[in-house]
Image 1 (cartoon, rainbow, N blue to C red):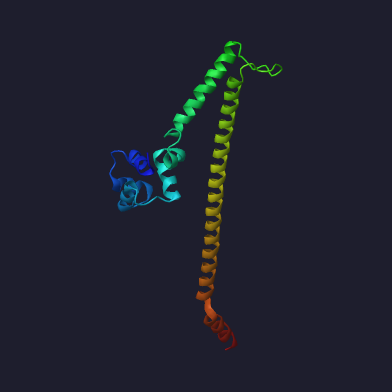
Image 2: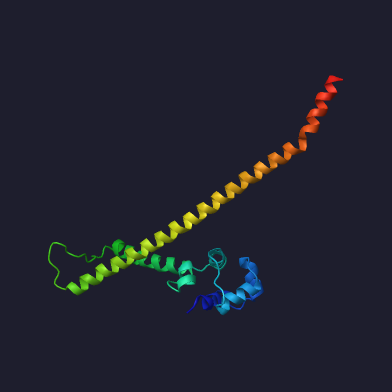
Length: 175
């Protein structure tokens, strides 16, 4: 499934014009995205994700669940199940690392699963770091723009006073 297909799924029965307004785009832009003629920029994708509650992984790559709540519910169910076993006092089977494993294939699948989880966590960390860097850059640009505007305001105030007002004040006191 392509990005264009996933955008159509997110839009659902909503018209392209209404969808475009919700994410700060144009109807023609949405049409081009859905036809695969153009790719949305990352800011547009973030607005789609935020406005419609879909994960960026699913939107960009088609991986994982569509909604973050689905991921959280699945994780919570796993944790709840794990904790219910502990609370019931049932024996949890733990690997015995003192003995050499007899079934290497089963043990390797556990290692593989752990490696995959680690890679997923690292990927998520990288995504968060990139997003953090992007947000810091946006803040820095905003701060620079504020400083520029403050400087312009000060210059305009100074220009409004002007040399003629100062000169008139000096001339008036001499007379």
